[in-house]
Image (tube, rainbow, N blue to C red; front, side, top):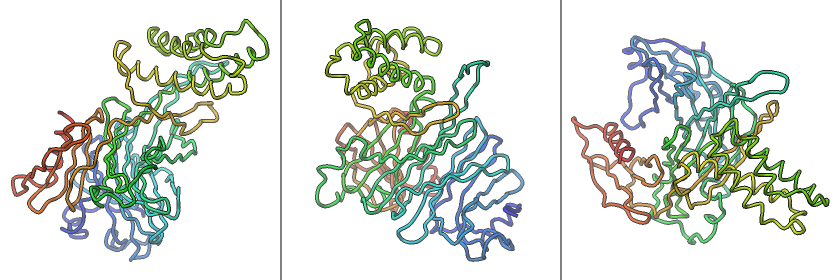
Length: 460
């Protein structure tokens, strides 16, 4: 058996709380149940069980109901490897709990794994190895979902349901300390198979240059090991926060899946530019790339987007393409087409987000392909935009938490102090407030203090 049921009292006896052990990660389910992940020896967590050797360290999941607790072994953790950390998130639309954890084979080899749990049934674990000769820690996970109606030839409309599991973690290996992000795409519940790895600290390359010879003392080990993944100011926007000693800075980036309809439109625009450009380069003088692209974008996108949005996007693409001199551009049509594809995505997402009368962000976003669904011919992309980058704040040596505002512009860093929880808040792009101490006692415990600070940054 992979699980057992116990009364709450018996569970407390079997697995007593330890003051030195971090609180297990937990999430609230759709029916009021509480999910809790914890690690320990198999014989302690599952007394009398026969699934693994008694001394094997495993990852377990508790499902805590009003009258009983069901405990499960997380699949893939029954071996001799050591599970060191875990995080969970409950996705309400699918009523599915997702678990992400770190498995260490030894002091230098590790992997990240993600698995779903729904109605007592485990999904197939997805393993992310990346650099196998690295130490991974502090995994975080978030889930986004969206749909697209696809009109298949010869049939009626087909709805595609996309779930993206966003995994984030800290890693240290031959390339130094890094913050890695992997968006795992499932379409209609099936994993598309791609496991992209994005180093969030170096997407534009500039963060790998100009570092001081010695790591900055401003970033404590505890702060470096506290990357955060929070909800943004939109239904599918996420905010990632992280700090690395070699940069001495705390960076915040926004992660947002490109809507399926928009990815399809941009991919179609790219292909159209290549086709029309090739005909123009072959001597067809009736072909005007900019005008043709404008008409194509409006025609393809008119069923999925408001007319004002699609006209705005088409006009921007036409203006950018009108300046191309075909004689010079013919050898690099793919490059121009890729630029047009990116422009379609950028302008549409800014328009959909801010409204046409608002100024788009001046920061340059990165549009990254993270997977392809071969049967549907669908391309999956993520928009990554840096929203803040400031010197890291002073912080203590206690357990550390990093929080960001929903728009990613402001940050708060909190850490355990001898008398409670201390915190600082960002003031502007380069400065922080003086540390403030929240004293914890019988009236305010640590969990409540952290919850107050999370709410503070979210509401201000």
